[in-house]
Image (cartoon, rainbow, N blue to C red):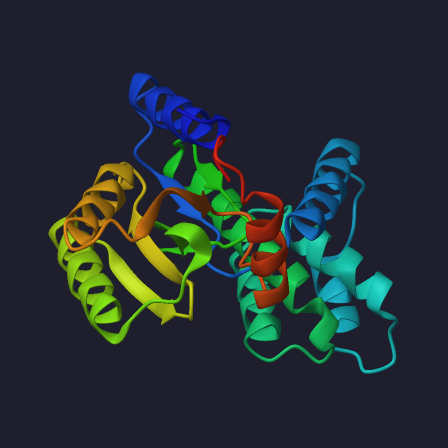
Length: 248
């Protein structure tokens, strides 16, 4: 079990032990660095508890004359209070942000506002689960990378086998495939699966099934919810890790 698997397992265990059934998953793809900046600002606002006028902050948010940094603060302030009007204002802004560079910030603010509002209305503890790739409903989004053994190019038959076996195994595991891209000597899958599911066995099973037809897929693979790798990043990674031992 790697560090990422361990973190997921511990989070699932904590939610189960504490009887927490209500959690919110960030749906949009927001870089981890920007998420951390938002969390720092949000916690600072919550800690300081400085008074502000909701309608004033809403006016600033939708004003074409206010700077981006000031609007960031407005979004953070509005997200910090259990107020339906504040939530609706964030929701409206996020649906069509006047400043495209605030799309990620408004996405974070919208989830935060939903949690604060839900906690206040229900009186129950709410949990926010985020990652670089986000998710949907109660499903997490992950990026997986698989490579050909010896980095040889896949034949047409091997491509058909990969497509058939991986789709079959993932469908059995109730995994939603958002993107399946087979390149010359590697392939990637962008997928969604239930928060409490472990799909690594299904991925390993798919590799085993494929390799019955010629042992052509490397058993090592990358599985992450941090980011989607570019083609250059993938090629650099395969070149760097093209060694007989060690996982990617």
